[in-house]
Amino acid sequence: MPRSVTLLGLSLLLMWMSAAHADELLNRPTDRTYDLIVKSGYLKVGVYRDFPPFSFEQDGRPAGVDVEIGRAIARAMGVGFRVHWIVPDETLSDDLRNNVWKGHYLDKTRLADVMMRVPYDKEYAYMRDSTGEMINGEVVLFGPYQQEHWAIAYNGNRIDSVPTMAIFQYHPIGVELDTLPAIYLSSGLRGRLREQVHHFRSVGQAFEGLATGEVEAVMAMRSEVDYQMKLRPDRSLKLAATGFPGIGKQQWDVGMAVKSTHRQLGYKIEAIVDGMVRSGEMKAVFDRYGLRYSMPGFYEEILGASNQ
Image (tube, rainbow, N blue to C red; front, side, top):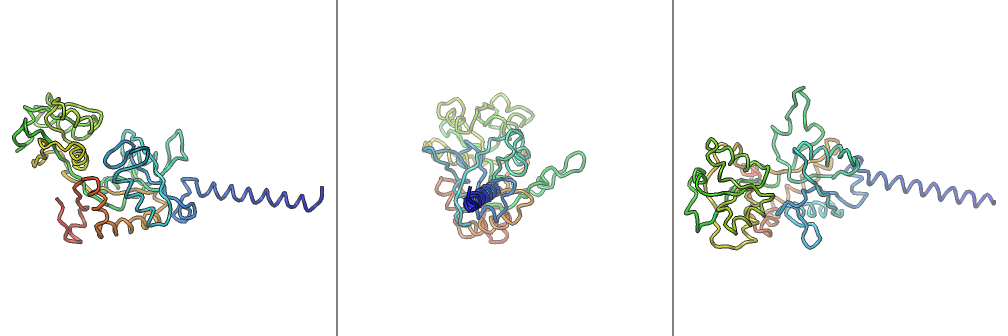
């Protein structure tokens, strides 16, 4: 075999190996630093599956507030958007481990570059286990982009008003299974509400129960309530103005998470999100889904914003 043919073959083999290695580096989730994300041409944004109005599929395409924010971040970075669907585990710490810094034991290579809808909370960020080790030390929580609240929608034909939570001793109320509202209402007023609490698999199904008369009210996150009321423009549906004594936090900031070694990516995304909040672009995303928007808490002091 001629020497030139042998050298050509060897050169092609080395080129193929180099290209394969480069592609592997660009797409290996644990190595996807900011520079590699830019070189790969896309950003993988982690959002929860089947979680309207934040992230869900519509006509076979990813949709929702968090999906649109993820697309806007990718666009500002000059890369494409790819969705990373998250199926919730038992705890948020499990979700962060499985989707941001380590990977699920069944597939440790399947990780998001950034995860949406993570509570922006210093106490949670620095929480320690019984041995003193930080539970979430492998991730960075950053970029608050929304303040979320609890809310109740009720049938105005069956309930005149909701002055206090005590009224639900006499009226059935729906909640999503295994959520804080389910725990709160089941234990509220020393258990006197428990018999009136109906559990549903989702907030959407709880609103179906409200439409059929199975329940006369639904408690969920305000964004979920707003979205379901938009889907069901029933004039009899009203929003309660009552507070939620004993629930802990009445409102909380929502942000994002990246792996602790990917802080450069976090700084870049944080700057983009900050610009969206200050310019009103963030509010516009929520407006498109019919949701009331509240800026994260610290913007109220910085910008003099009024959260409602």
